[in-house]
Length: 189
Image (cartoon, rainbow, N blue to C red; front, side):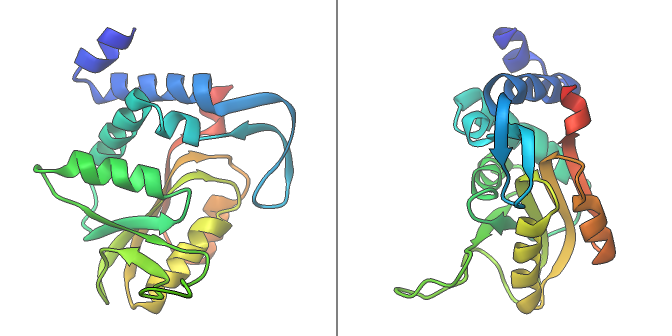
């Protein structure tokens, strides 16, 4: 299976292999979990386990980069920590075909050094895509949206690796922002 996933040039095969790795490494079951949204769940996506696996990180870069080709935008980023690994995977993959620069938004501005709320590459008025590893209600990604909008940036869309189908789409529809996901919890049933 590993050799097939690496040599197969099919976007479908890469997406399927990424789904399999998320299920293997990141989908936790068998106890109750407290989510960032404050809700409780019988399952949890610990995406860091997939994103810090060499094949998983490579596949995230491949799948997201291919998916993002349909959009016109200048920068890719989101709220730390959920956006950092997928953003970096895409930035690395994008070179030299279509170089994409990234940024991340802190929960609050640093109180030292540059004192930035947003680190990395972003310019006033730029078109950006917000990325997140997992969305429940979309509140974390919405913080990133608000931060870049304060810089007069236009949010092209928000893209989540996994949408838990618990309100993120509705959150962004209410804001007039396009929301997409590579996978939903339905892909893991």
